[in-house]
Length: 141
Image 1 (cartoon, rainbow, N blue to C red):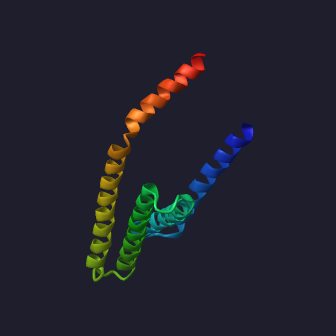
Image 2: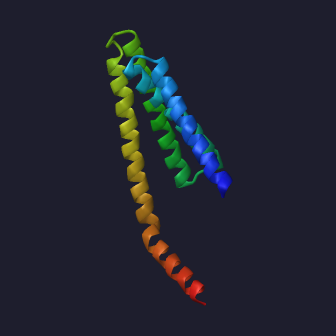
Image 3: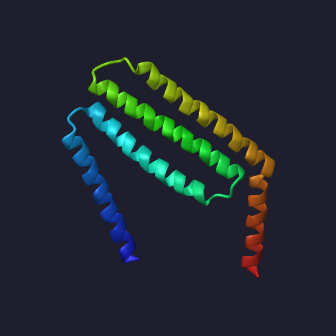
């Protein structure tokens, strides 16, 4: 148990040190936040890809995860384009940025609808209530 808390403390310190380094090294606050967004975006893409490889082929969860991954990729690309615009002191790529951000939100919207349909189709809420009741009954025995 002590090791768990020690690891959490070390992780928090590492995150704070990393954030400090980013904002200390990069003087432009827009670029610093862009770099931070891309860093977390790439980490999210890696974890989502790992999750995707563990999901059953053809499952609705795998399809939803793939859509989520595509929207993450669109957001990371948009963040990269935004940083390029800042570095070049240009707005020439502004519309490209808008396209990728809009694409990400369209995919999120479609994915949200698919999740809503899946929830209604399988009736997870009712099943969860049934499972909870059965677990309580087993615990009482």
